[in-house]
Image (cartoon, rainbow, N blue to C red; front, top):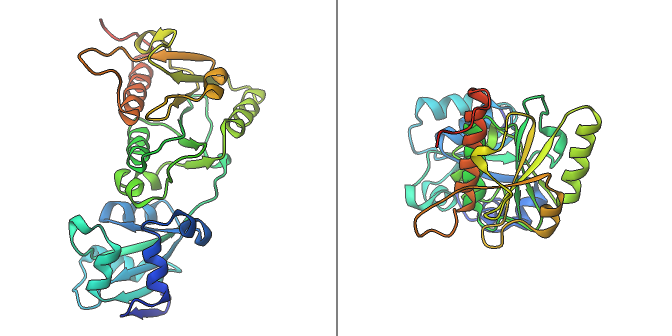
Length: 280
């Protein structure tokens, strides 16, 4: 077990961790972020993420879950912190957390995403909402995708709101940030050169074909656009096909995370049913 530390004042280490709640630059420079909640922390440990610190209130009797983590997680500093300070680092809506983890960010390397003959991946182009990123990662995990790629000037995958919205799926599914579409297209071209017949399929209300009529059983990289402006021109030109989600009512469009969930569900449905089109 790593040596125990105690934080009882708003010292430099506390201020650094506090800055991770709102300051993306400081998270990125340190290469770490805060994780709260039984499921997210448990999944981070289960999937082998590097835990740099476990922060707990020494005046609070730990649950079996917290006691096990404090006893068994290798290499992490054990930090005793007053409940008042711990509450400032946690989700204010849920009260003081029993335990927080400080996790290291993995590299933003597209090689982290496994590529197989049944590959299903998602690109989120320039998302502005951290909550939408987390929700999309959660849906991608639920429907068997192999990875999520966030491109362009976008909200941060490791923003506390994204981490919270993913409900732990961030730790089970590779999520990689890249500067632009170019890196993704180069990666996709390399996969094709290796013999994978990968299709890049974008979503747009003016797509050439209804989603439910488009075959998604082969290796597919789905591309979801920005919440306000949709796909960038570069992504539109890069996609092999564009599909639309038929909607009714007075809604003009779907939320980006909801659209991604719909497309992922249809891809999974087709794969389970041998590519049969949806009933009309």
